Image 1 (cartoon, one colour):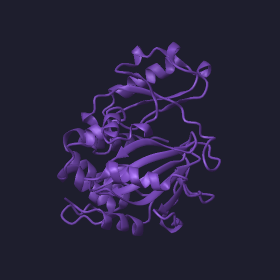
Image 2 (cartoon, helix red, strand yellow):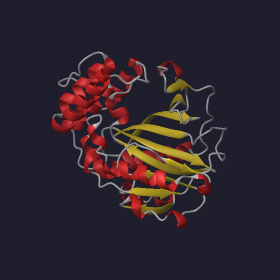
Image 3 (cartoon, one colour):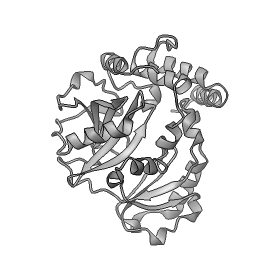
Length: 298
């Protein structure tokens, strides 16, 4: 049940996001982890992500966190072949021509996290509903939620991409398997995998290093993420994934690169400079410290 106290707390935090994001981040961190951020001597990866938001070089964050604009960066790096084919791009939800879209596609906003339309049969979707949903999303300032100002600098738009076939993966999964590669100045280190996502937001989580050794002891189970029921096989293109990660993340102290492997090919997902908004509670403190030690402040 959503209480008045909950509403007031959320409203206050959102207001702080607009007026004093560092204070908002400090309070969110305290509420999530039960301690204050050590701004002068950040240690674990959560603290360092927060530090980078306000004291690091974020000049390219908005461009590369933009799910549309990042495509140009990928192409400039000579990796256009890993981009999921683009079907369309619209600046307003009302401009979407649903009739010309294929039977299957993925549609999303480019400027944060929100509703994603995974369409497997166009004849079954309520286009009026989704037009309203995307219209709302385009007006949302996602960066105010958790103190991530770089998202507010992205010019919002809607994009549609080809729907990748989740059945053409190494193992059965109810969703695409996300290979989320933690990179530090161009060096891939650990890979977290998300599989079997549900509409309710649950998914299986596994953690591997670049040699595909598994670390279930680093996972802190919660209502959204559970240790994977089975180990995932090493991706056929793991070496290529690591090469791609090295190319795309060089020069950035910390960035998580998300990739897919479908039909024997690697596809680009996104680049995230503030994973979990610097509030990650799905990893143990030991793993948060390991990632923090790998991340050097610049």
